[in-house]
Image (cartoon, rainbow, N blue to C red; front, side, top):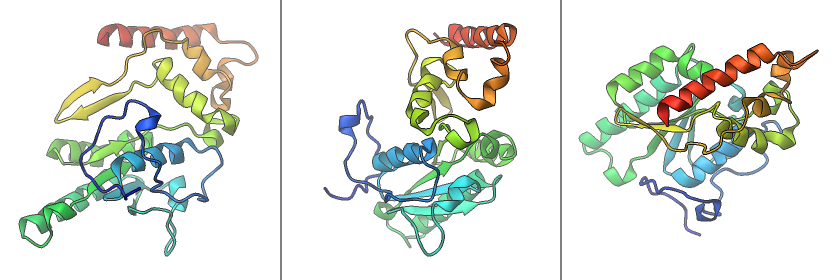
Length: 230
């Protein structure tokens, strides 16, 4: 199959529509059952090889260590708080090169930020908000189960990714030109307890006995959120 290089994105409705070509080689140094790597692998299949990923320093720093890389596309590391700023610099540089005629528009690449919650809206809030304010042309993705940090059996990675959406605790949204829309709304949301139970980081909510007050509060917050967007 030909290498995927298009910068035009097509909506993917099911797994059969995803190319079988791999844009990330197997055998990386990340943890077994890493949800982030699977999310990145699928994203790379859709985005193609004409892409530069900008990653905030973290566990993914181990993915590509000079001079070795599993990527067919480009990969850039930044400090933990600077992923969006790094992407901004790349996007600006590409735009300047094309404006000066030093790079053909067909050679343009997608700029994609890969970052977690801290690098996005905790310590990275200033860089993220700055990129949003400028209306830069880049993609920003962030949420994947982590068996090492969340303390669960790695074989349950896909299950917890699905539960995050089906319980409504992680809403699937996209923001395009300032307009935010929900790309998926669970018809029958599963109890949030299904997502929280079994993860070591939430053990305090269930041991020695279930904290019904806290669990009820979390569930009510989710119910109120989804009632407002339904």
